[in-house]
Length: 246
Length: 146
Image (cartoon, rainbow over all chains, first blue to last red; front, side, top):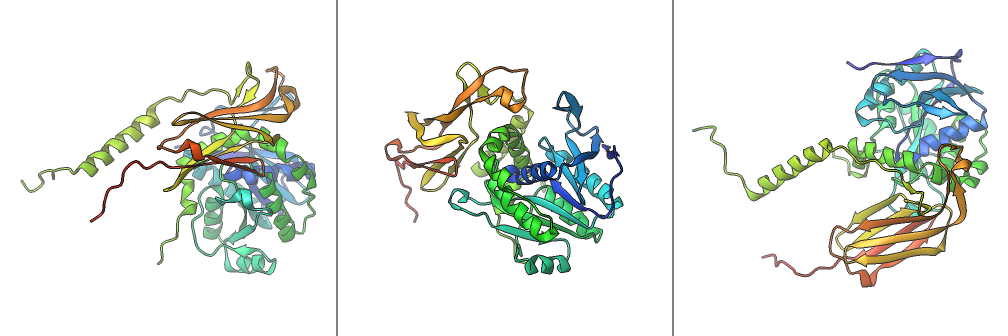
């Protein structure tokens, strides 16, 4: 049976906001998480090790790093993956991250991701929807002016995070910005980050993210392409489905 | 015999055939290649194709591209070429990559269209850096429904 574990490199603070930015539609979560890591000058706190990870090392300034890492600073802990997550390992990886995260007693777990819309080219300002692991948090989202998704399907990392947190009675929300399905979408990431700031009270300047939009879209092409393959394997298109009435 | 196999309908046979084809596809090793062509100085854009009842919609993500530099050309009845000049050259070095040398100045890709279309009525638009090509489907016959 495959296993995964989180290996800590630094002392990880408790009671932080735990943010997940995993590859998914429009790479919204990865782009947003990457921006937060830069803005808050975060340092690597931990990384994931597992025999289910592909034999990949990510090189930065000539040094090798694990593709799935945890960064921290300023009351934030951020998990980010620099490669597409294999669809058949996603359950193991998300449960490992959540179990580890639970030991740090986070203030709130927040997933940032996209909500694919077919007419994305026509949308000037992507709308951000919210989902939550309990009714109190749904009310909090509504009080903050974030429309809550009432019915439908979620597929992917944020779906598992919400389900696991609901099972364990942990506070968790997901912020889902309208986005392209399979093109990197920095504008959607900026929209999600604005609502992230609204929820957490953290000040986030999204102007640099929007200025670098074209560069991000160019750099993120290959990760997006591999993420698309994994999204097809996990039947991501189900998010377009109409929910069954029960 | 109580458990004698029921005679298969043509639909069951097609479904079985498609299931087998899907399994075979999963077993085929992919031929991975880079998303760029160093000799032509081109990048392959991310692109998608949707077939609707009335038209085929092709989109391509084209960062660093001005709309006037985009060319969409049918190569034949079922193949389309998309080319676009970038407003500036992008070098590998800018992305911190030193083990490849070179620069890119344009996007280029060819797309195969899976159903008959009328290329003469192709329409294009370019919004938020994404090219959209709409081509009406060609219908050569109708089956009357009684």
